[in-house]
Image (cartoon, rainbow, N blue to C red; front, side):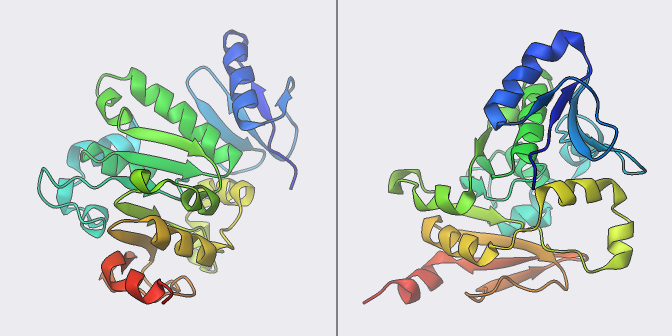
Length: 262
């Protein structure tokens, strides 16, 4: 797959566009494409855009759904908070989001006080996250939350495998992007089809799960559609069901002795 190009529509932001292109190894182009997919840096934010009916895709931590979840999302009662083991105010696990994507779950967990490292291997998704973090760091309402979020552009399985023992997180969170076979679901997510097309599916999820189990101190949490297949390999220790989503939990104390050679 050819790398996704970056186009800057604002002359005042061309230096910033050049920095993004260097940081994430993106081809910097000087004319808006007439077809295909590209990143476009405009006056407000960086977006993934394409021709046709697809809407622009961008990461957002300040306004829209992020603001609603920040203000009225349900706090520690949210399923994702329960899944990572967030309980009392002092019980704040360190978290690695190994498939950060657009960072929505990472932002929720950081807004609840957790230190979150977002690991994303796609240069497109990493660039969108970088742009969103910069904007969140400048906004009064989200600067404190953004300070608890760190972005790493790397292959998660490799990065976790090389992590020193004293830097291992309490929780590794995995939300793999599998092929969407639900036509109704796919039709309802037209604005995200461009994102999935460019990012691609996580076909090496079993390898990532193994690396996550080896790196996590307390648990690995895998987010799946409620009726979606579990990642092949190790069976979950427990399952937390929701209306449309479930969380497969891999409790390290229960798994690691069995996984350690004699």
